[in-house]
Length: 85
Image 1 (cartoon, rainbow, N blue to C red):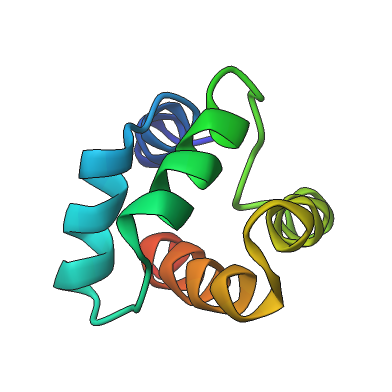
Image 2 (cartoon, one colour; image 1 turned 180 degrees about the vertical axis):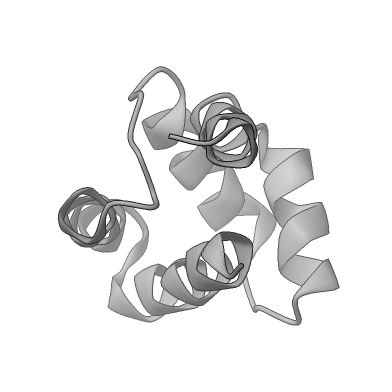
């Protein structure tokens, strides 16, 4: 895993709701403060690799359970933007 991937994964695994909202705004993704809080709480400490398609898919499914499928799709868009090279 490259240093770039390590940094992105670390940020995802330690993200706060405010940071998530900032990135969502930057990438034009619709996420409410309440949804961001739920997602950030779920992500904290998960140690997931969003560059791995299987792990990212499982994470998005879990986010869908927590914040709803529409939000999970939006967060997946954000993950895809972050993993583009």
